[in-house]
Image (cartoon, rainbow, N blue to C red):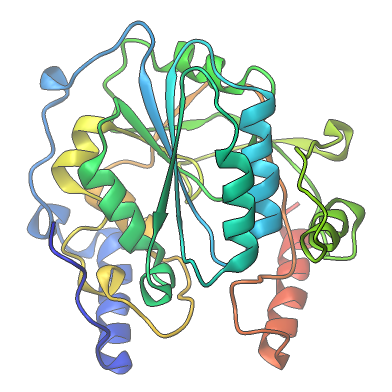
Length: 308
């Protein structure tokens, strides 16, 4: 598979990104920018022990990833075969430490798949997602984020929900989520503090009473469960230049809306239990404790209040 294009002039890339954001509203036909979708009647259906690939992307989110991967070790699947793919950079030392720890756990039905990319490739999440989509061997591939946890019964209920389906894209009907947490809140403060010491890592767990149920209306960024035949056919924004171009800093994740436009669906809701998300104010992947970073956190807090 060809490597993504080298980083190009930012104004041109941003202009293309704006064009595709407008296109994703339905201004132009999606078929102009992707290969044909496989016909639903021709898609492979699985009724027993499906193979699912989970795809996370971690840049300076090691505490979140630690919680996520701990949830899989604590609650491994029995009704599906699972490949856990994490895209990361070796320069992100805390993330490497988490992956080394989790990779030491051998579980039936679970395969760890750590994919190292240069930081410039990590900064554009669509690059890793596209690579995973085009190369997946799974029946279904779940594009998620490392702040999503898979608690008791989650993965087995996913196997039941996907049985004999051929939808282009599915998503859980409901999640459980925290309020917007600061790094000083207990849940995050503990993980941050432990990663700054030389103490051996252990499996983390959560108090589920800290999470509240929340209905989902569409297959948003961390909840896109894509049929494997579709993923292999069209990738994840494959050929959409701005979302496959390496960058010199973390780029806002706008590719999810473009993907749903290309796929021609907002997703089909399915009943999956045990889906949890840790919501957080501070975005560690952005450029340090800058004034803009602090303002982003304040804006996120206001948005959270408005959306309740």
